[in-house]
Length: 441
Image (cartoon, helix red, strand yellow):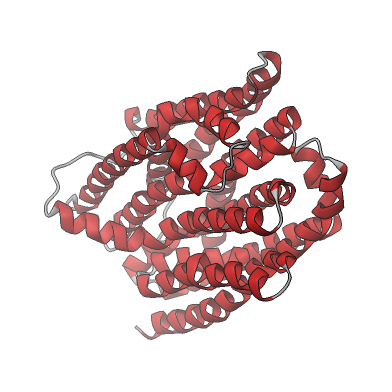
């Protein structure tokens, strides 16, 4: 695959199919866990996994920080014709950075599990379920982070299909393993965590087979100015990191506000909303991850026309995803609830209005998330940062606190639709401005 001269449309959709497959299976991990636990344990099980959800956001976001940041710089160096091995210095620096972050995250969850879960919204009823789920997961915690790193570099080393195959293999194991561990072995919530942990290890082993292949050009090499390169990786990957970690922050804020104003039934419904929103986000990630290698490489080579063509393809795909998920959520909200838990009458009464209000945000969510990948790929970290921080913390956080306090408690469900609208106003302006600037250079 020649990213500089190959047919842009064919390249994009080849990368998209691989990235979408990876994103699809990655999101299925959490969805299957939620469905199995919700069916086994009822609304309390689903609410407990809503408490655990920010843990996933944090660990995956750390993997994206080094994975996306390092792989963008890796591809940009190759795109501008550098063959002195500097691109592999960025790969090596990313591996070192991921290892350090993985160890820190591992220590955090092992030493402060109870305190973390209580802060994330658990009460004494939900805490035992959340702890049971995390017990096997915490044994292999760094694997989840490293899988994001390796997957990002596989896409930039012309092996997107292997990344998809790896996630697919782990995902299939997780689906059947969940059923077997939760129901057949009657392990309940612990079984869901066990299946997820083993599935992650299987996926990682498949991805690592690339390093035994003759096609692999990734090498661990001595790194000059390690801390400088780690800083460049962090700056470049920050927006991808923040998009995901922000989802964790928002989930914590929502969890605490929901328990304060609306109670555990509303939190159980929000657990379903988290899974659907994560699925929509993964679709948006797949668009960004498909476009990123083409954008980064052609940015390094100064090919503005190919960058524009890739941008238009990505925007069209983002809008298609937006239409599908918004339409499905508005037309069939009850479908989600019955998939993810054994609902009570109280749950069935409140769920449709909650899901329909929140899902209005899906109209603009895919474009906003893709915009952060676009800005990163053309080395506009400032714009990427502004979009990420506005969407992930500033605007959304203010609305989550303000809406239920100023209006009725149920107005909290409009926080994300309003956030996406404000974010889009800036993202659309910045994409137009930055793309015009490329053509003038």
